[in-house]
Image (cartoon, rainbow, N blue to C red; front, side, top):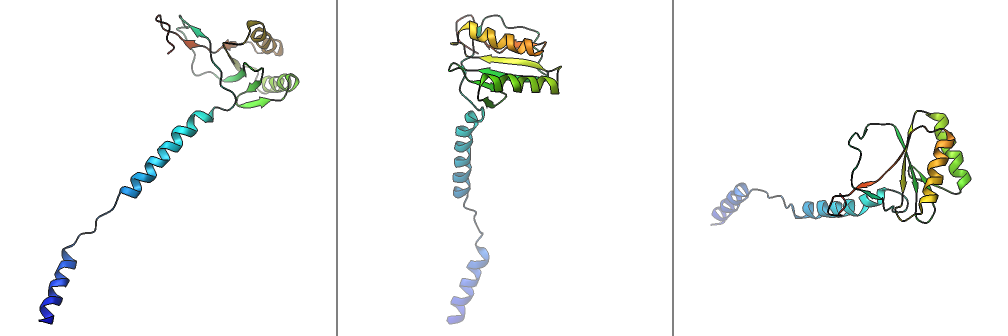
Length: 149
């Protein structure tokens, strides 16, 4: 009788198939997804800038240009690419350094729509005085119903 029970248990071991529990894997993937969703908006360093809206954007946009992004925020902070400049003098020095390294480069000026026009004009003028031949303002396209794209 002991041999019959032993043979029966051996048969069950051969018949069982292992199952992979994917619940922990799904948990990890969801946590990573949430982390990336939270971190991705923060990758653009600096303060948030509310871009001005326009109804008729330039149809001939040149997307594959070598550009230098200059940002001027509502609070008066200067950024070149993602680096915040400590002062106006540091901003000028860095612009001159960037122009000396690659004079053919174009400047994309991102200015907060709530900033006064005179201050944005001064930043625009400074870029031109340093020698950048192409300075463009970054804007958001606005539809005829008033919503931003």
